[in-house]
Image (cartoon, rainbow, N blue to C red; front, side, top):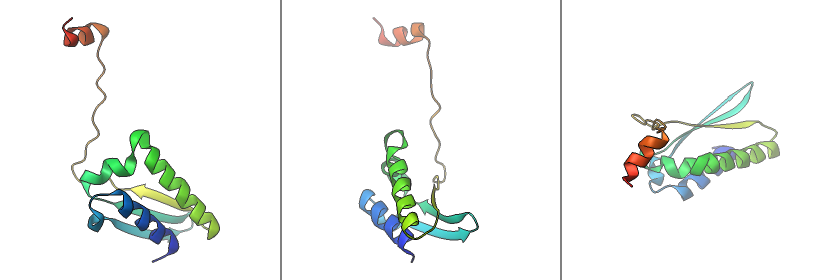
Length: 102
């Protein structure tokens, strides 16, 4: 396994509750290195983090590892089967006040 994939595996397994479910696929093409990450659906929140900050930090660190090896490294996080992003629910002020029942 290459250094970038080893680094990613080390970081991700330290973050998740189910380290045995971590799978990393590494592909190389003319655009650089693509690391595809799959984790247990229960661990997705830990990988993404609040507002995506953890994922951004991991991608930044992977770029640094790539620069040391003269390669462009990108990370793709696979969304688990059946994973749905919640729709943003916006309410009017009147609806929100009604919910409060003041």
